Image 1 (spheres, one colour):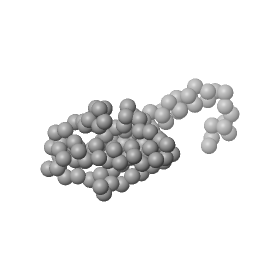
Image 2 (cartoon, helix red, strand yellow):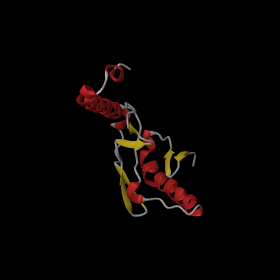
Image 3 (cartoon, rainbow, N blue to C red):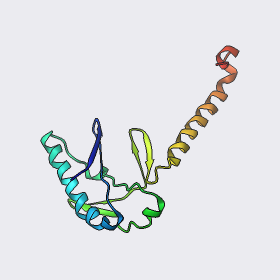
Image 4 (cartoon, one colour):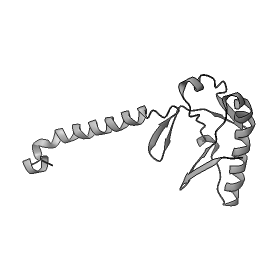
Length: 131
């Protein structure tokens, strides 16, 4: 099947390269075969795939993404749609690997922390503020 599997604790990702010309074959039968193989492996280790948490994301340049016509897949009776972003170990990945959403999230978190510090700075000493 020639897939790459990455996992940490109970989160696993399966990666597979395919050509745009073969999108129908891969996105219809290929994904279902990979899903079924993963399900068999997980069953052997007393685990289950949660169909409602399963996401599909195609990572490609915008010019290639325009050529992808299929927007989801049916696997074991579940309709699994493609997503443009997914969180993986706390990092938000997008289908173009631009990290725009991740950067916005980090900047927003930093701004909120600085705003909270500015609210309490009158209660801090000069040494506390001078780091």
